[in-house]
Image (cartoon, rainbow, N blue to C red; front, side, top):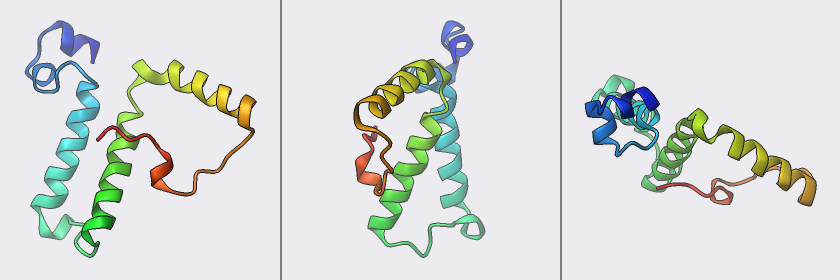
Length: 98
């Protein structure tokens, strides 16, 4: 990401220097899956299920951006220390970037 941003690469410009590769991966995934009926794993989902699934997939991919790694670890450690271990039961418990 940093290299692409520094080089003013077209992907960095397209994704406004924010998680460039992760945004690209999400976009390509959905372009392939939705663009090919034989790859559309979402075809049987309701619009609500699709929306939830899409948010979860995008959230998961975005979390692979290592620039946020230490911030996520610190946040997780604080939650565990303050609240104990909590199992997330619903997608809504996440703060998604939509």
